[in-house]
Length: 302
Image: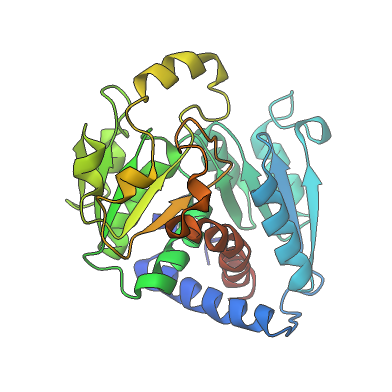
């Protein structure tokens, strides 16, 4: 049987994703009730971070501990990844020592090469192409507030980056309508828009995107590794800031999402998190833990 990896949302079937999300809801209820599990006892997750992250590290590490297993953090200084030893050799070595590998890197090609050589599950903790683990948490959050996502209206305002591209993929899988407002030159890759199966549209007007939306979401204007473009991007995106006034164009029951960290005064206005419509962000952040625990159990315990 081929090793199952999670490199994009489409690495799993729609039914498998729904199964993971249903289980994530159960795990969250158990966690809130103080119940413990040992489903991954003696299992070890190696976490390779070429790009740092608070939420990704804590959610995966805490998740493995809560499931009875353990996680090993590997920074760029702790591995030979990209420093002489071929990726394929690292994958084969780790396959003999741990039970799964989570990689957070800039180059999606590295993930694909690593997974091809690995005999254990490889999880995409973020790449320049997509961020499927973030979308698991986002979809879980959306389900908690709206139930069935089919025909839900979702608005993305800002850069058509890796998270946005995973939203395109999710729209095609879960059947929600995604309207992306972004400046010219900053749209998602057309190949990712195609993954939305006709559910994704582009506009240059944030108000048009947000009109009657139940979910409004965004991300930073300059992602990690794009710091040299920050000033250029601030000018390009100055009319794409999410404010309380912009949320007023959305549905009365709108909920705001942001994968964090947020930069007040840039993609969101100062004090936006004081608006009760944005408190969903903290639920979303917490759901990284539960969605990834469910994913880990699916990949490692079946």
